[in-house]
Amino acid sequence: MSDYDLVIRSGTVLDGSGGEAQQADVAVNGGVIAAVGRDLGPGREEIDAQDMLVTPGFVDVHTHYDGHVTWENRLRPSSCHGVTTAIMGNCGVGFAPCREQDHDTLIRLMDGVEDIPFPVLAEGLPWTWESFPEYLDVLAGRDYDMDVGGYLPHAALRVYVMGARGARREPATADDIERMCALLEEALDAGAMGIGTSRTLFHRASDGSPIPTLDATNDELLALARTLRKAGKGVFQIVEDVHLPGKDVSVLRQLAEASGRPLTFSMGTGNSGPQIWPQLLQGLEDANAAGVTIKGQVMPRAIGMMLGVELTLNPFYTTAGYRE
Image (cartoon, rainbow, N blue to C red; front, top):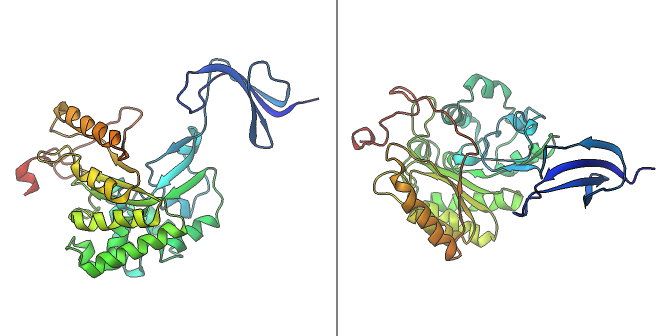
């Protein structure tokens, strides 16, 4: 007679707590871990995990499945590689809230920022929503091979509230900011993970126009951060060119302090070289030591990038002449 539904035998167990790896069996009953230890009783099904790692499912905190989740049930390749939760809405790009006349604007933005082709998105997106809560309702009605969550994308929010002014990166008025904050609060109540935004020159639509949030003022971002504080929940996700000359992590700390919530940002470098890392890491260490939670997102493997003078990633983008 079996003691368990499933026993994973003799694997190298990393339980996610930060402790040392241990060789152990993992037993499962009713889809829940029932025991971890050596020489556990028999299972109805057994897997030999000798010389293999046994870990919790990975949470991929930076994905762009925002479109795919509206037509796909299997979120590959992530679900094929141990990811059990994916977070979308990063970099401020996504598809809600959105009015019909702005569909192509958001598709071009995702096409340019993430290289997901315009025809694929235009054909696949059903657009059976307008607001962010309605978008979440659409996702809630679908089945996936992993869990998903999403930030409210700031670029979509800006275009929704400001229309063409937002797409052209014009300054938001006090009324615009108030409306954005109200919609963020609504999204948080509906289940948004927080808000995602970007102020990097890297992020451009497929027509070459910069992301609508590129020139968003600190006042605009601070107002959104304070909305997270008011709600008492959510994460502030941002891509900011902190490695460029004259910039540092101080603005990230201001946002994290204003929100009272965790802030996460993409850690990367450009032509400024590795000399910025000591200052960047020291700034993060100082903030976290003071109780201000800022986490840098890093890639678990090396990647390659294609740069070109007519491509999104221009090798001269960090130079003063190109920025002008």
